[in-house]
Length: 245
Image (cartoon, rainbow, N blue to C red; front, side, top):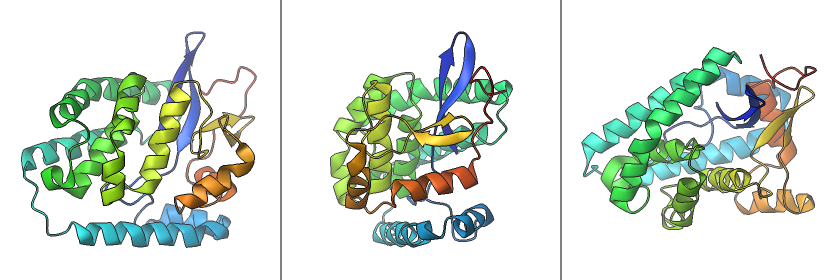
């Protein structure tokens, strides 16, 4: 899981969440993930979309399976940074957990910025393998301290989306992240905020058309997305101050 955090009157407040990410280029968890299986029992309409995402992820892995990364050291470094990123997000809603997550993001930011600068964008599968591309994307997704950097990567990402090195799901997530961080309405509804103990999307452009936009990328309707997110990461409880513990 990964969260978007903002400070409000000196306190940390959890304001957004995105869906589960697996590094192998799959937008959802692996087949044997019991947490996902339990969520789909509560959100049965989402199952077909999750399975379609898995099939696309498997096709992508097979397409790039024979590639030998030209920069294995960078690949391993990206995977390690992404592992630490996700480890920092495996915890409760405590302030200590959030502070640790923010510290990891801050430590990763200069390095992923340099990697992107050195490669003129995200490194490619030929350079770091498909998993390395996914790891680099994840680090950019969490580079909320530098919205201009996230925007720069998004502007250059389309060739990797067209080649299948970045999934349409991840493209939607980064698009919404960039828009939200620029205080603009998001397009795909992927960025959620906790309101009265429930997840709801942050402001969207033409919300009545969000499901059409999501369908154009092969993604499930927004209501199903929120259902799965709620099951896999229950929102923080409502409280008088609007702040999480």
